[in-house]
Amino acid sequence: MSSPRVRKIADRIQVVVAEMLERRIKDPRLGFVTLTDVRVSGDNQQATIFYTVLGSPEDQEAQLASTAAALESAKGLLRSEVGKQLGMRHVPTLTFVPDALPETARHLEDVLARAKAQDEAVAAIRREEYAGDPDPYKKPRAADEDDLDLDDLDDLDDADEQA
Image (cartoon, rainbow, N blue to C red; front, side):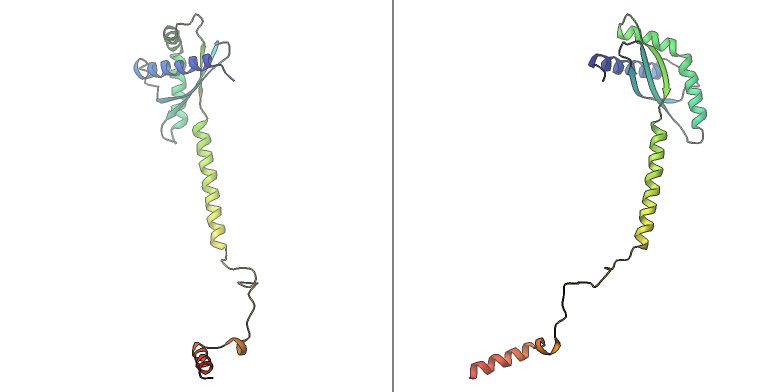
């Protein structure tokens, strides 16, 4: 677990780097970058910055490679600005790592789509009948004993009243 101080430093580094990428870094290789997470080592010497690049799935690899090159070339400027903003004596070394979150999410969506298709296939095959009788506890009644009509009951009541 990281201490609250380390977490605050990581959050502040994320804000500073995001503002710098938005306002001051004008590299044409830099795509639409989103910083997803920053992790700082316990001794505040290393900061790993996770990022994603928004783009079309066909051109994702090329955009990721050009963005990685742009971030590597701007690393010194970003590190000096982090040092100024944080006011630390020893500024952490910045390492940029592409986040695997979009790939993981895409894989999870594929798995869920396959599971849904298999559920629909099973539902199409399923029969909506019971294996045995519809009600195994219901016993058939005898037709000659219990087939009294309401008219017969009225006749019986009339006969009882006359007697």
